[in-house]
Length: 259
Image 1 (tube, rainbow, N blue to C red):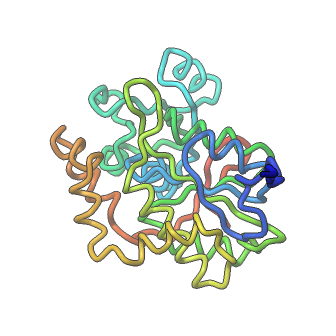
Image 2 (cartoon, rainbow, N blue to C red; image 1 turned 135 degrees about the horizontal axis):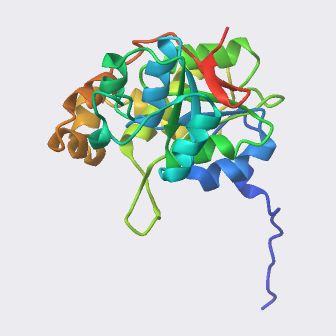
Image 3 (spheres, rainbow, N blue to C red; image 1 turned 30 degrees about the horizontal axis):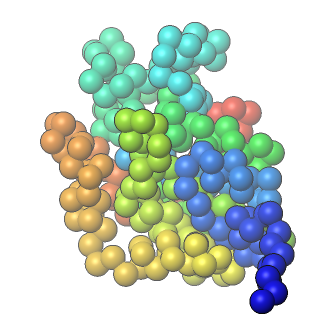
């Protein structure tokens, strides 16, 4: 019996032909970024929510991929304050990855925000435009993308859900990031962006068919981790759907509000 060989291009993962695409983590961003004009980073709990909250107040946010001594050196070079881990915040250094802490902290014109996931995805974008999305600004991001011509086959966009990390460093898909990505993709489609790839359409459908996004995120593993750790306000702020019209765009190494 003859063997039938089906030829396949080695770029099958690019979701070619679609105006809006979806994938997970730094690897997904690295693979899709050469084929798209814009990359939307989603890390609801809590990098992209924190960036959005800070940029809402007028802060320029510098993403940084490592939470080690080099972050302080980088902040010094950028003449910026350094955001620390939630439990490391002090009255003298109140800026952290916590959206609630950033809302209460004194205004900082420039802030370095270390995040292995969100910052790594931002760095993987290459020459693509990088935008921060979350549940707080999903409709604003979808509208901005469509208004600026992104999300079409000629100028495709990739929406990247950050997910979380298992102790061994492998990706743990997180439902809050799936919902955040779906919210942005749903908004983009409503503003005539697309067509959505099957992956992107599935993420949008997940958001559109979830009856209670707040309850779903709060009850999920990442939400419960924060609630049980004493940070329920972070979950509350992160699930305020469309509370913000701010669209942070990476410009000269820092996220600032789109004009």
